[in-house]
Length: 370
Image (cartoon, rainbow, N blue to C red; front, side, top):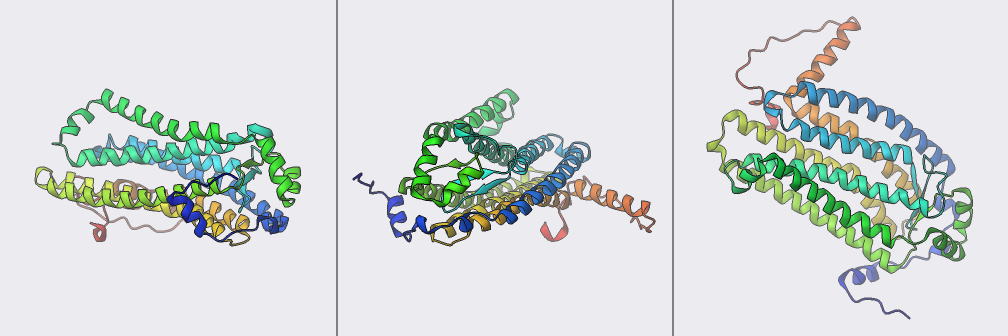
């Protein structure tokens, strides 16, 4: 018998209730009607996401204030990765098979077979890392801009050095996460043989869906998933510390910055922080909650996880709301579009006369958020 490694994550796994996977039936793992509704939801979500992406892309590029001429491209970069990620999920339509670490596609990958089915997970990780990278470079940029007299700023402000820095980080992150997954993913035909022999409920699923992919349910995989949850928790704490430290740096350098620049820095970083929080609430929290409930033996998690994945489809809408509400130039553009639509529909629109008091970024944030 193989001796289990005595480490902290193994001890955590031992504290979890022991699940009898053989008791799970086909009804526990799959609900065809719910899966059909889930597929329609993603089709509608994909249409809304694409519409919002086009509107936001035009708004960021054309309607950004002059003070945001450089940072707007970071927003475009962040928005593009987020859109590609959402579109991928919309076309993929993945259906999890909790408590097994497996799933299948009812979308574009539905006909994949054998080891080709592993592409589903690899593409997901690649895009997730890309989306996290886009947020990271935005955070780094805001940090550096808040401290223009720092030693790091002198090198960061040299575009070739900055580009090399970003490329190295991106390749490093992708290589660290994608390459190991490529080698540790089991041979899918072997996985099918093992899982169907142990758990007869999976036989019908494999017969109906050739794109099934995943891992065998072992303590090692459980430890790995617990490790991921631990890392996510540490990252959340780290982001909070970064935000508080940014406020400290900005306050420290306030005397060296104009009022407009100070308020702009505060506005943009607060907006970015809120975007990160929403990223956690809409993407990380539902998936984490589904996984934790699965570990504690909560049944029907395959069905509940479809709801968790559906919440992911609202990410683009909330991203649009945050950018268009907290950044003044975007807020004014949305208002003008709204008023234009009202006028075309025959409604009366009162346009207030505003006397500009300074740069557009001085009061970019709504008063109660300043």
